[in-house]
Amino acid sequence: MKEDKHNEVEPEVVPEELIVDDVDATPAENEAAEAETAAVADEELSEEERLRSRNSELEASLEKEKKEYMFLMAEFDNFRKRTLREKSELIKNAAESAFKGLLPIVDDFERALKASEGVDDAVSIREGMELIYKKLKKYMEQNGVKEMDPADTVFDADRHEAISAVPVSDDSLKGKILDTVEKGYTINDKVLRHAKVVVGK
Image (cartoon, rainbow, N blue to C red):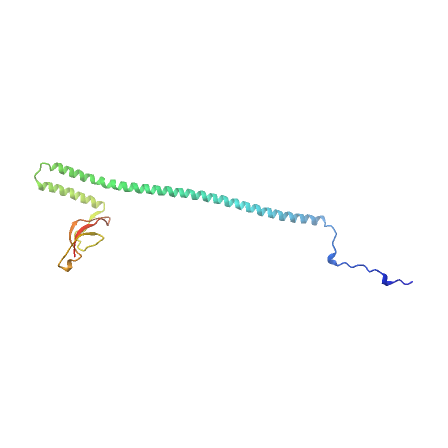
């Protein structure tokens, strides 16, 4: 009897991509996978710790810089106050020193006035006054105070103060100093008092 080949059922072919490997992983493979997972976790943890440590360092550095800044501000404020105090004392002491130098001259004037009482000799009185005057001029020069050159003939607004302008017939005298009413003085080459002069116009 012939078998009916048409009735035979052919086995179904399953595509390879659908085949699932159902074989369990070996213990070594499992340990390797666990180690890799632990390494990734450790790496993430160490990165977080590193960032936290860096953050702590930056905060400490910022606090240190802030303290140093506050210290410098306090130092500068103290320096400013000290400088103002020293400047004030310097001005005060400079005036004190100047007047202290004038005291011997005042003493000379008092002695001269006392000595001139009842004296009719004007010549001796004048000689005494001239000595005191020369002493005063010398003291002034020692402290940088000098009389402006009385031979100045050209008007200079930086050094002179014109209190009067007189018409002149000679054109060469226009703008020139004709007379000095009050002497001018300089201190260390800076004008201390302008000379009061009469100018030709």
